[in-house]
Length: 568
Image (cartoon, rainbow, N blue to C red):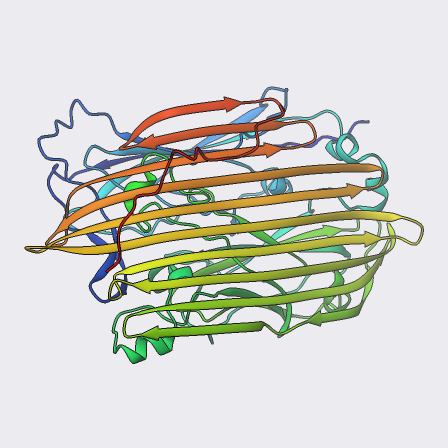
């Protein structure tokens, strides 16, 4: 008899109506970088605008289409809520609202939820939790209308057999988790379930007891950063702040690391992608094309399987989350994916080797007054090896993480100019070996390049000119094997944006934002290429290729030059 799997897809459509009039709004200041220089998040004035004739602005994030099965959905559920994030306490999506306009805004998010298969097909009532932190004032207060649709697609052949071959079933690797538990704050709550990490000594802790027949465990970590650490990659060193007697200037330098611990021992880390939210740096950059990851923030997997020998004792254990150099506030939680041995009441395991090399940090600082240069280089490696014996056999799992970070920063124009050039290398490998063969192997190489030019010039009479250029990239190469099957994929996702704003008395009086993006995904049986550009809310061109072709490597048109500005 064929087994049945149900690929699940979540589609969220959001429509925001504002009750405000089309007038100049006070700027929503997101961050003070340094003296006399702010990064703004605000709406351009919409004077003389007839809102009955102007449709809401439709925002979107460029990403590849979800590979939907050829079968028709057997059922779907439509939920009407103000917003939604979690199901049964398990976080399914972390997102960001689009920047509001007086004429209204519309955006949608699609996400493949097949990974959460076991959670969503439970024959029991669970809580679909809704949380959206809102700003209530005379300008931004509005009403969110949200439709949430879940699509269930039947598949009459085993997906794992199709992708990896029958050998994967012998080891149990490559299948979906049997249980998914939230590693977050406990319900009921009136706000988000995530832990709020407000400084470098803050630790969010969750106690748990796992079933004694687990043979694999993976921790999926959700991370987002806000307030004083929303732009952590541009935070200046503390000695620069002290020497210049600066106040309300986020510090602790530009390096951040999310540390995951199990019973007090470091088991993995996350060096997060530099998500820029829809009002970040210069809000005009992200209209209508939003920044990479802003509508569907990436998650990060930590392989816990090597440590199962330490926690298969039926006792209470603790996961902990902290952030190196953190300022307030980081929102962190996780989902624990557990694979159960259906033919055994108890599995056994042992941690054979574990190494967590301390951070290797190189700092260089050279400044005079408010102008200067700074260099931060950081490296780290974490590895663990352990075996688990179950009805699938005795399998040794090796998990390795390698990280490298480089950030060069220039401050000029009496502290009103900042240039940040940063690169994060984030690699991880999981290999599972049986006595006679390799049961499972996956390797991921990630590179997150980031460039920001920000300059504010005083034009007199309370007026200033703000310039911003941003380059943002998410590059990833994945390869994996399970049994006799092998898969390989690559993603190159690059954005380039230029923005200019004239500001008077903290109000934007004019401005222009342009964004170019090239997205290129190449998989074993599916390719997707998109080259798109926008300016002043208008799509200039949009080229899409849905088949694998040569000569479609990601690139940005060299004629799309950055806005130039001189630093005095």
